[in-house]
Amino acid sequence: MHSPTISDVLRARRLQRAHLSPTPLLSYPALDAAVGAGVRVLVKHENLQPTGAFKVRGGVALLAAMDPGERARGVLGYSTGNHAQSLAYAAALFDVPCTIVMPENPNPLKAQAVRRLGAELVEAGADFDAARRHAEQLAPRRGMRLVSAANEPDLIAGVATAYLEIFEQEPDLDTIIVPVGGGSGAAAACLVASAISPRCRVIAVQSRNSPAAHDSWRSGRCVERTNNTSAEGLATGSGFELTQRLLRDHLADFVLVDDDDLRWAQWLLMRDARTVAESAAAAPLAALLAARDGLAGRRVAIMCTGGNAGETELRACLSATTPG
Image 1 (cartoon, rainbow, N blue to C red):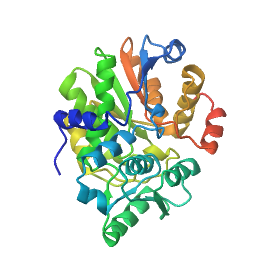
Image 2 (cartoon, one colour; image 1 turned 90 degrees about the vertical axis):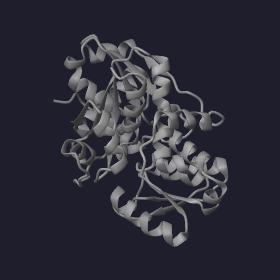
Image 3 (cartoon, one colour; image 1 turned 135 degrees about the horizontal axis):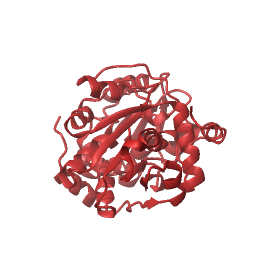
Image 4 (cartoon, rainbow, N blue to C red; image 1 turned 180 degrees about the vertical axis):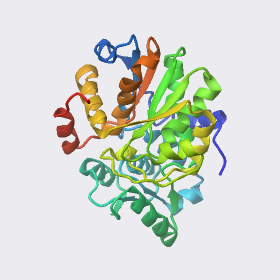
């Protein structure tokens, strides 16, 4: 499996241009004050994508690049929600049959969105990894193209267009903090930063309750770990080969945060940036709050990767208290 290049990212942007618009990179004085230490916080609002999450960039780029024969087979993906919506949205754009496998009892907001986009939804397994195993068995039986949540060069190239935009919007950025589940977003950030702004540090963040990607990066090999976070977008139980390869080449640091930290960061984004973020999308702010002294005086972009928070998640966010 080849690693995507900056040329692939530029091609992906050309393929996306007719279907997706750039998203804003905004600063909020109240959020700067909440973080403190003289940090200037810039929020990349991928929650404003048509599906409410950054993943749609990858889905559109992937299906746009497929030849007619591949499209005719249809695509089958597995996801806790945002990758699912990405594929379903792109499949609807290009009139491609689409099946999505999600864990049982999925986020109702995300499941409903997948069905509304015309994809077939199959619920299987207790968690992301069980859904993945079911999808890997189902795709060949149906003759459909299995689309990994992370091991897809065209998908990563598509996601990476968000980081092209960031460096166009803020060329003097010091740091980007990216949440990690499978790692496509952080891998994409590393790919673009290394090509365009090597001085910019990319920091990844995952939940302490689901540290597979973090531990894979630390150990230098893909490992399996318990997967108990409540943050759907961070909930993976194993590392992915392609994204880990890109992270090992370029990532500056990888940190872990508690789920309580995620809820507090969600609340701060709501209060100080008027932004509804799902818990995974609040992870970069949680990481920034934990590391602010080391980032004093820096320009830091945090990726608000999605806004598809369900009712239960929002209620927990609204009742959050200051960590520690």
